[in-house]
Image 1 (spheres, rainbow, N blue to C red):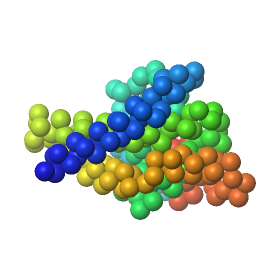
Image 2: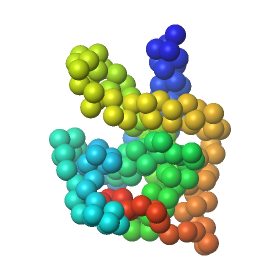
Image 3: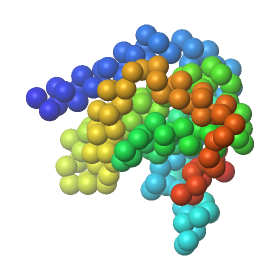
Length: 186
């Protein structure tokens, strides 16, 4: 039953993407080369954890829509957070301050982040089925499934509205004030 529930969870986000933003996402004009896997395990920080000093693992490097770069980093930022949307918004706001996003990009970003989490958990399950001894492939799976469960309970328009509000708000807080900023990577 757990497997069937997880399948329905992923199918929900795929269906929402397909029906609400796929055509808008694929029509976005801006593309760039993206790391495609900016997560906690691939970002190197200084000893005091206040600066990003490097990134590793360029095996997933691709040329794709610019928004996918921030959507992927934002997806990983949401994992394990009480308020995943606030975490995503902080990353997006910091990115937007350095490299302004177009309105159409902001409108598809949340669902692209959700799809990245879906991709991550499905890939983990597949790789683990092929090599049950490889525990590394499960490193973010539990948090990914938990995050998807939280996100599924949020009205689908709410995160995008929150992103737009936080980006355009004049009283916004500094980006990622308690952690190194992904902004310089983007």
